[in-house]
Each structure stands twice: as structure tokens, then as C-alpha cells.
Image (cartoon, rainbow, N blue to C red; front, side, top):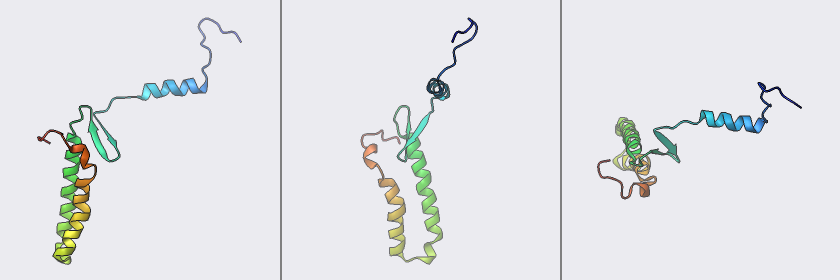
Length: 100
């Protein structure tokens, strides 16, 4: 098959999909992997911010149930919900800056 100078040979499907993927790539400020939010400088600031919001939200929900539960039940719920969130991947936080 011959083509004129101004015509381009048709690309294979694989080549087209590879070039379209490259065109869609973009840099993002944070990324989430296994529930951990990372930024480009690995400061864990986005992770700490998200974790604070999540824990405060959980504590507000637990506070609404305070009158319905005993102190022991409340403690168990807090350990199950809040402390498990803080404990998840806690080894990643070792050695990070204390300002977070």
C-alpha cells in the first residue's frame, strides 16, 4: 500500500492506545494508595489532614450514641473505630516531621 506525502499511514490499535494514554497523563499534587494519601515531597501532610477529619467525624458520631451505651461499650467502639484508624500503617509515620 502506498500513501501520498501528505497522508499518514494508519497506526495500529496498540500504538493509538499507547499515544492516547500518554496524552492523558497528568501530574497530581497527591495520590492515594492503600488508603494512604501521599504528596510529592512525602511529608504526609495530606494523610494527617484526612486522618484528623476522619477521626473527628467518628468521634462526633460516637458522642451522639453516648447516652445509649455503657462506658465499656463506648470504649470498645472508640478502640475499634478511632484507634484502628490511627494505627493503620503507623509504621509509615515513623521518622516524619513532628510538625504534622
